[in-house]
Length: 410
Image (cartoon, rainbow, N blue to C red; front, side, top):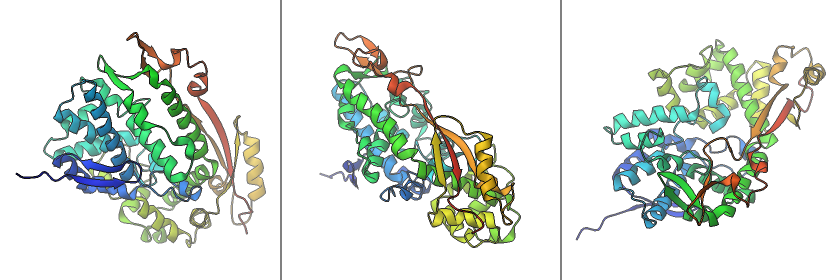
């Protein structure tokens, strides 16, 4: 009797994660997927939370593990899921973040104009599908929400999906921010399917509330923490300055070929040319870090100052407000920093403003559905236990103003 060997990966969050099929194992081993080892999960958040050095590779495997647990729960509740569907569901969640660029969200629109990482993930999934002779077709159909069984897509992209469950739990673990430590086991145990829609049993409503609360708190405390926000904004400013200097020989000689491709264009490419995709999948965090280390010593004072600020963690001050900052506020900070070395034009790289927002739950989107004991389906925000749902459904805005801590002439 031949004993089937199962590959196990040891994860600090869930323990051993099995690789259930040869196709999944081959996809994980592919260079396009292995690249995620070199893409940080939380951008530059490690400048605030020293333990936050985990990557997109770990997150993708964790989300796949949650999918395995979900399939098991639904099958026990007599929801028919074929072996082919189970494999495709795991592949779809495994590959959902392929399109992230260096430092994840920090550079999302800098490299490819007006293109989200989800759109690029789909492009790369299609590319992998060619390499695997069409074996990812069902997974792509689920990812694009074109498969008839809609709950499978909701598990990948929904208001309570497995992507969010893993990143909340994982990011909480690595940052030490306990507010994000949700009970994913309980939430998955409460899942069911009615008319091919994902629903949650009513007795799990408070676990769902904890999930929404965790998402809201993690955004303000971790993902949109003002210091890491300042660092990521500064990174984009630095790359924008490098693009302005694209004809400078010193700048071009100190960076990798993939990064050089994107920086020497006048603006990000707006379409999916094969050459742009090829350079994109060769680009990761190490390209950016190597460039920043070199740019510290560049003759251009703006580029060198910006690079030093990130590498040496000499980050700008950032003020937050519930109201937009006026032109007068910005001009006041710029006037304080004018010197012989910096003119009004270049100061835009050091004094700038904008806004961020957070909405934990969208009542006008596909709502979270509760399965009542009467078998009636009720949107979460209409359940009697959720009188405070406005705290989660209201979009909250924060406005920021960034400026250096000291005179730039020093």
